[in-house]
Length: 146
Ligand code: DQA
Image: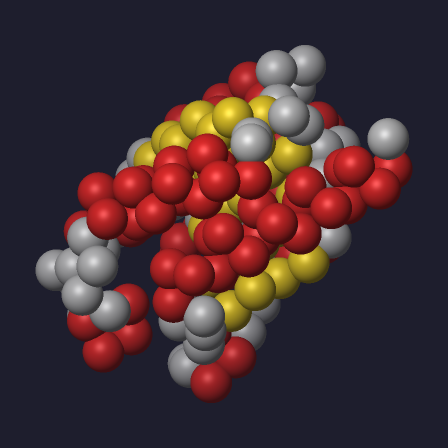
């Protein structure tokens, strides 16, 4: 089984950006956590990050036929991007939306999520532990459907 883990804009600055919301772990720490977890549950992962909306669309498209599921934190594009939603709907892969912060307790403009319309599940406010949780959920879902 292979999962694609996609992170959107500014998530490369984890550890530096707004630690009250996003904690002190760096992006490298996050990737190490994901890779350790992948090994422990016996799945392959490909981790990708971009600050550019079109790249995120390209990543999702490239998962078609190569990955079994997607974990995505689209960052601020969560709240604006129909293109990313359309890409997710186009490939029709099982997808979990992750947010490090508790978005539902933040500003009004963060209360809209386009990607949620293509997500099996949304995890918010669990810090970077939300990623391994999303991987576990996808694994169970994919195995259950096999
Ligand atoms: C975020 C929440 C978004 O509102 C924000 O724009 C981000 C990070 C999160 O992980 O909590 O960049 O997706």
